[in-house]
Each structure stands twice: as structure tokens, then as C-alpha cells.
Image (cartoon, rainbow, N blue to C red; front, top):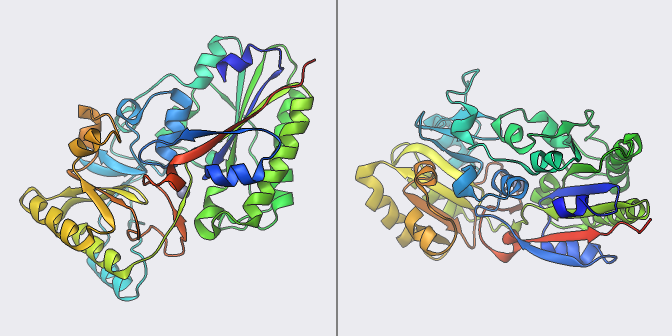
Length: 380
Ligand SMILES: [Zn+2]
């Protein structure tokens, strides 16, 4: 991206597409070559956008999933919401289990301010925007769905960028984040990008980073016609911008894999991740989870997982994961993840919401392989 800003183009538009898998991009984008990138481990937005925008890995920025332990507070943080996550009351958990529903992760009343500082959650890193600005570019973030997230994560991600006007991100979507009208959704998004490009005075190259949330829709419906159509409209817009000397680059943070809900996995998982076995609720993201077992029960929890879910779940210690090349284990990372890591390869852990049909966090090709596509600016 930085190299492109020095090219003859007027600047670069980055379409940051949440949840898009490599193969869905390859099917939709026929006017440019789609290259393959690898997501982070865990393959989730919190981790992957941090890595994409800072060039550092999770051992450096320490954003290792949506939920992890904050060592200074010894509490589990929900990083996007910037709040403590507690074990849910036993009665609610039992009710959810008997109803066959997925256990909710929404805690009861939470303190107003999180009991940690931003830098306890995410280790500050230099962002792409700070580097681009140092090189003379003007940086603008069109955050859309991310605009409603105030915590340390977005503050760390967007350091050095101006924030565009608030977006009408609901246009063409349902309240649940499903794409109800692909044409309207894409038109609203591209109109917002157009507005920023038109207002830019060309005094400096522009780096515009626009967030495109397909993730919520894909969680519910997978890579369906609505997703395909939005991608088609985005390519049309990208070609038109490229014609007007903008370089357009699109990439995603992670893909998603189809879930096969399994009552047995849910039951065993609920047992081993409960307050009777663990010091903190489980962390991680979707299909990769961190467990913080009580020291006296660690061996037993590991044995139960291996014996009962060994065919569907890969179990390892943080050190073993480092040996498998999934992360570079540093003391900071070690203090955030628990003693046991569980990655599902087949079924599903009880998801945050029972209606999810697709999820991510794990290491399958569907989750890990993501697209990078560039529509080069037409020569002036
Ligand atoms: Zn997601």
C-alpha cells in the first residue's frame, strides 16, 4: 500500500472486506487477478485487522482473539466491547443447555469502565496510516460498522487516520447485519467512498480505507448470491475508480467454515469450560478457544477433551501451538491465552449465537485463505 501511494495514481482505496474467503472472491472478481494471503491465527477480525494494519503478528500486538485474559487485571476481556466477561449464572447456563440453545456470552451488569488501560489490552504499534502520513499521504478511514465500536481495538487500528463522516451502514441491510438488498447496500457504500474521493483536493495522495462488513451476513447465510452480487457491484465500482486514476485494493481478514452443530461437543464443551473447571470463562474466537483451567483440574480437563472430542477438536498447549507454527509464543502472549487451546476441525463449540451457520477462528483453508486483489490505476 505504501509503495502504491508513491505511484502516479491519485491515491489508494482499500476495500477491507470482513469475512470474505478466497474462493468466493475468485468466483466474483473476474476483472482482476485474485492473489492468496494467509489470515492470522486465530482467524478472526480482532487479530487479523491488527496484523494487516500494523504488519506485526499477535505476539507483538497481543490482540489474540475476541476474548482473552488481561494479565494485570486477571480478568477475561471482550476486546471489541472493552468489557469484562464473567461466567454466566448457573441457572441461565442450565436453561440454555436444556433448551438446546447455545450458551449466551452476554454477561449481566458490567462495570462502566473496564478495569485496565488500553495498552494492557493491545500493545501499541505503528499503523499503516501513521507510516503513510509520515510519507506525505492523507489517510481517511470510512469505518461504517466499526464506527460504533469505541474501545482500545479500533483506537489502536485507526491511529493516524482521519475518520470520515458517520455512515449509513444500515442501507440495504437488516438489523441483524444480513444483506437484504445487495444493490442498495453496495450503492450506499460506494456513494460514501465517492463522496470522500470527490472532496479530496489532490494536494497529497489519499489513502482511503473503507470497511465492508460481509461477516454478519456470511455467519448466517454463507457465501450466497447476496454476497456474490455485492462483490460484483464492488468490482464495477473499483474499475470505475481505477479509470479515474485511483488504485483500488481489496482484501479480507478471514474466511468462514460451515458449522456442523453437534450436541455432544456442546455438552462436553460446556462442562469443561464451566466455572467448576476453570478460573475464567473460555477465551479465543469462534472455532479456536483458550481454556483457563483450575490448576488441580488441568490434567483432567485435557483428558476429558482428548477422550471425548479427540475426533473433532485439536487440543494443545500454547507451547505445542508454537511448535506447530501457529504462533510465536512470547511471555505477553503466554499470559493472555490459557493453559489449553482447543481448535475445532469438524463440529462447533457452543457459538455465541445459536443461529450461526458459519464461523471462523480456526485453521481450515476456508478460514485461513483470503484474497488480495488490486485494480491498478489507469495511466493519466
Ligand atoms: Zn465473524
